[in-house]
Amino acid sequence: MNHYMKEFCQTTGELLGSEQVRMMGRWCHHNRITTLDHSLFVAYWSFRAARALGLDETAAARGGLLHDLYLYDSRDKSAHPGWQCFDHPRAAARNAQELTDLSDKERNIILSHMWPLGGALPRSMEAWLVDVVDTLCAGLELSGIYDPSRLRRRLGVEPITEASEEPSPAPAFL
Image (cartoon, rainbow, N blue to C red):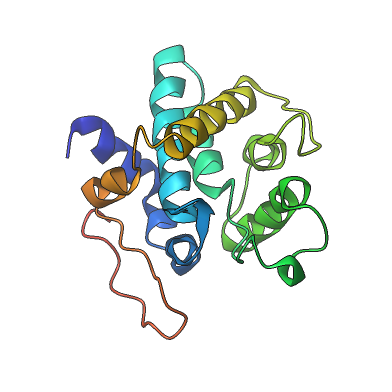
C-alpha cells in the first residue's frame, strides 16, 4: 500500500470499517462493479485530486465514499420510489447522515453528485470535483478499462456480501 492509500485509509477509516459502507458490496452498480468498489474508486481519486488542487481532501474523500450509500438493489423497482438516477442521492444522504455527522459540504457532495440529473447544484469546488470524478470513474468501469475491485483489495476493505454474513473484524489499517 502506498502512502496515498495509507493517508486515504486514515482519513476515511471510521467509514471503511463500518458495516453500512462494507454492505455496499452486496449490490452491483455498474454492470458487475459493486457499489462499494465504485464508491471506493470515486473516493480515492477525489481524495488524490483534492490534495493536488489544494482543496478539502477529507470532505472529498468522505463525500465520495458515501455518495452512493443507498443500500438497495437499484434494479429492484420496489426498493425506490422513482427513477434511480434522481432518487439515489437523497437516499444516500439520509443513510450517510444516520451513519456519521456530515458537514454541509459533505452533504452537498452526496446530494449533487449526479448534477445536472440528480437535482442539487454543487456548491463547493469539492462537490464539483466529486461529480466529475464520479463520471470519469463510471466511464472507466463501464468501458472495462479499470476494475475498481483491485483498489478495494489493495486498501484491504472486505465487503459484506450476504445478508446473513457476520461482519468480519474491522480492517487492519484502523
